[in-house]
Image 1 (cartoon, rainbow, N blue to C red):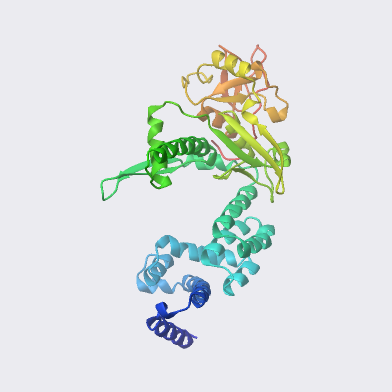
Image 2 (image 1 turned 60 degrees about the vertical axis):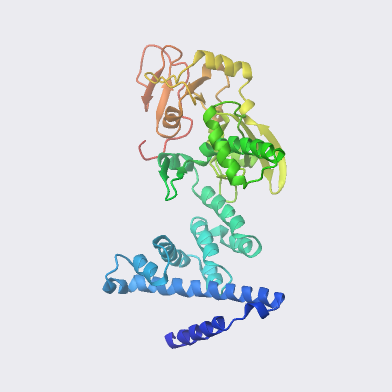
Length: 400
């Protein structure tokens, strides 16, 4: 086998070395690109199988490498993350015979295989549809669909909350002295920010065109981000959420359904409801490709009621918390559980305490001037609570 591969490599090296691309007719050049693409896909498949064998036999230990991935990265001239991804692919392919067959036959690229395997191992029923999509659509479209599959497969767990716990914003200077940034946040946190930046970017770009200037859209996006520092004229963030009516009624998605922020990423139904408390959200309810209804969820709470609530709760109502900015409106008895949208059933919480109440078992009791914040069941007191204080969503089994 190795001798055959050596002969193939020698033949390819000879062909590429004598390849006079300038004499190649256009149509034939296109055909050669397709052929080399197939060779590349087959090469990736063979390398993945062999890499898995190297890891399983522990042959890499004799080379002094720190891991199988480190050895593969060095030998193939790839990064450690790319080598690790190939090894992970090999493991997941053992559970997905149809994807494995498509990969080994050269039908799938390594990128397509990675997207499909990471989604299909979480929902095996989606494998066939993802393979069909890979044959018709771009890698970008496949990646988006795979995100939906992974998000739906998680079930009731609030993915946004898990991501939020790992949020960060980092900055540094590159070699040219330019400031660089890297930010990680939950999609439902980032979506309003992107909407505002996009709105300002379009305005700045229009003004630049009128002045006869033309730069890349990314440059105007950077200008838009900088303009947020002045705090003036920020447009209202209108976030488009695509979700089915069944998902809304159920309160979460199941396999085959999606709840996603248009142009951003899939989010949970819980996250969509949380967004509704922070600004105007358009819920675009679809069945298949047909739009059934568009609801402006941010207007569920009437303006007069919102004004009264802001007047009553100028800060987060949790005792000892004085946060005034970025407050979110909480239904003390959840709306989905029949809690009314009335002043006595509403309170303003900072994002942190809202998250603790929603996901980690903390509960709010009482009323203005006598709010109580406790974890778990409320201690018995002589005064009856204003509301039942039930949690927005059942807390996860792990602690907060």
